[in-house]
Amino acid sequence: MQRLTWFLIVTLVFPYFGFTNSPATSDRVQKVIIDAGHGGKDPGNLGTRRYKTYEKDIALSVAIETAKEIEKEFPDVEVILTRESDRFLELYERTALANREKGDLFISIHCDAVDNNTAYGTTTYVMGKNHDDENQVALRENSVILMEDNYQEKYEGYDPRKPESYIALTLYQYAFQNQSIELAQIIQNSFKNDAGRRDRGVKQQPLYVTSRCSMPSVLVELGFLTNSKEEDFLLSVSGQKKMAKSIATSFGLYKSRRELNSLNGNAELEKKRIVENKLKEQNSKAVFYVQLSVSGLKKPLNEKPFNVLSNILIKKEGRLYRYLQGEYKTKSKCDSAMIFAKNNGFIDAFIVAYKQEKKISLEEAKRLNQ
Image 1 (tube, rainbow, N blue to C red):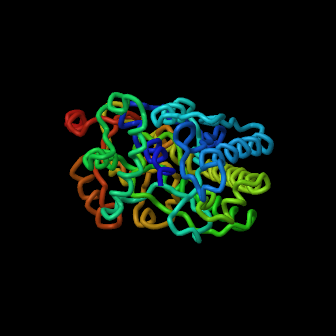
Image 2: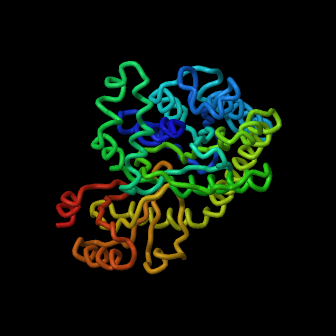
Image 3: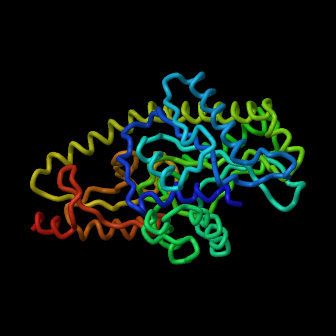
């Protein structure tokens, strides 16, 4: 199952190894990164071996066709392919490209394979929670970096054979999981309803999306090349066009939903501005808040667990939304509010302080308010 390997690294390793990106400040979906898995000396899975065409070839054909479909239907969207030919692209190169281009979405295209040659259907993967029984799977998937020259230097000591290296990847928060799940489900629905494929569902891998992940990401498994009937379909021009069309259509639906939600959120943004103006008026004093959570997705405040609390402020920082509660002049009052928040669904809540719009340390806040 080498097909997932580079994807796990792309969505996790680049901040760990110092590849950073300034997140976009708009909810518009204007740039999508399309990646064809594997390539060159890494063929991916070999299918039934009845053909000399492998996973890397099908992934590239569908990726190129998907890019064409998106460019045709959405001329305002910039589409970037991680590779446009049969070449071996190292993991850190894919990571650097996606990050450098500041994409709004990352779609990886692969084909599945298992020992059971009757298995068939499509699956879309997103990042998921850690499960101890699955850690070894992720460690095996990451071992593809061993194919790279000087991988020890490129990945600054990361070794996929060592459990401690994998554990280091799980220390980050996942900010875009909900958006990734939304896109993944739209893709699966289109595969089923538009392309007539079997829906194997949206699945999660036991990995955390990093706090500096630049975009929602999904990995698409087009079908099983170890199933002769499905392999024939994915090798056909018509089959590849159907799958590419489904992905492009799904992208369009996701884009429209995201941008519509952004327009509907203008009223809430205005409320946010009013609250932030109150912060500006407090020129010399610090204000304490209970930080409830941070997310890449804007959440409705009239649903649980937010509806239990009042006076919630949403601070947008880049592409992340920081959810703060209250506006307390003393830390002691904020302490009580934090306990209430923890007891009502926000177990990771903690106290933060601001002076005007700038976040400051609690020590500095105490000094300012003496």
